[in-house]
Every structure is written in C-alpha cells, then in structure tokens.
Length: 138
Image (cartoon, rainbow, N blue to C red; front, side, top):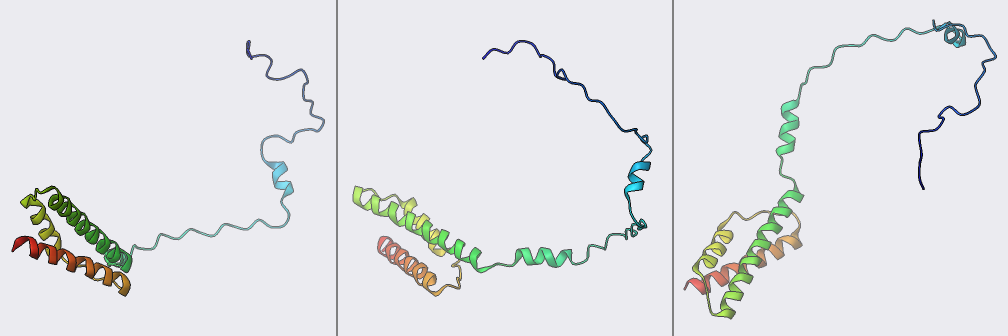
C-alpha cells in the first residue's frame, strides 16, 4: 500500500458549539460543586528515619533458604571435583591440582541446614569426598 501526502487531518465536517462558554475562569466548575468545600488537611513533616539500623540488621540475618543454597553449592562443587578426579583416574592422568582443589572444598566451612533430609545428603557427599581424598593422598 502506498501512502501519498499527509491528507486532510481535520476532515470535512466542522464542529459548532451551541451553548455559550462561561470563560476560562473556572466559574462553571465551581457551580457544579455541591455543598461546602472542605479544606485540605495540613501536611505534617516526615517522621525521622528511626530504626534504619534494625532494618539493615534484619537484611544480614542468615535465613534457612540461604544456608540451604550455600550448602547445595558446596556439595555441587565437591561433586564436580570428584567427577574431575574420576575422569583423571579413568584416563590414567591424575593432576595434583585436582586433589588440592577437592581438599580445599572439603576443608571449607560446612553449612548447617535446617532440613534433616538435605543435611543427610550433604553429609554423605562430604563423607564421600573425604574418603576419596584419603585414598588419593595415602
């Protein structure tokens, strides 16, 4: 479709006003109001920002989901290192760095989680990594 020119934007019909305008002073709007007009209440000053320190302290509280997430990330890292060691054993090449990386992860701080089932799984992964590490270093 081809568009040529802007054309007539107004159209051919014109608008006629039949009533008289009362001006732009707002008198017609004031006539529409029924009853007394209420005064707007005064605006008070903003309350002081008390308790900001307590809000910031709440943000730093370690919740159960964050602990569980960190525990899962630690376990996943151990599993990844164990898998690298497994590939190294199967290929006949065992880089010392892989063993040191696994030892670093195992020695990292263990995360306490509230879910007993998740804690059991994380403990099993941790134990397996320690056993493999003991076998490889002796």
